[in-house]
Image 1: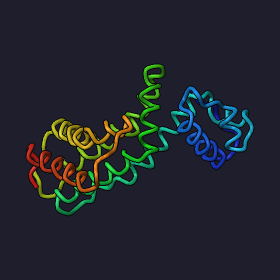
Image 2 (image 1 turned 45 degrees about the horizontal axis):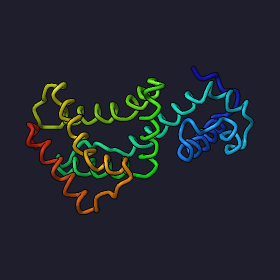
Image 3 (image 1 turned 90 degrees about the vertical axis):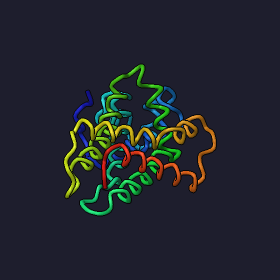
Image 4 (image 1 turned 30 degrees about the vertical axis):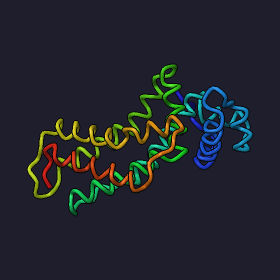
Length: 201
């Protein structure tokens, strides 16, 4: 568990920002608390006052990054369902394929076997959260018959899985990613398949 911080929230954010850059540069194993403290321009003890260990610090970075990402995904109360889903898909692809997102994801995958709590923290703050939000959106559209919530959840999971697909796989492997035109065709097909699966606009 992280220790109770003894300084300001601003100092905590300063440490997280510095640590994120160090982790992305060196990976989890290569990142030292000494280097993180130096990058944040604080003492190593200050880092430990906020975070009990390197794993706690990395988990905090993951949660903060997931918060930043999920807050940009908007589910409007009205509007054409297909267009809402296209906008969501476009935002999702743009967010998850950034170099920083890919680097962070690689690190999480590498470390989750050794520290399952890191994987659990990422899943709860990111994939599970946005999937649940989409399931609720599909189930609560005005003027539409409510579907079984578990079915909405499955459709939401499959939708995001389609969006990840080979786009993310290629990015993780360091291969060239799709041209924007190809990405648009990719997300349009994912939206069409979701709507065809039983959710009518």
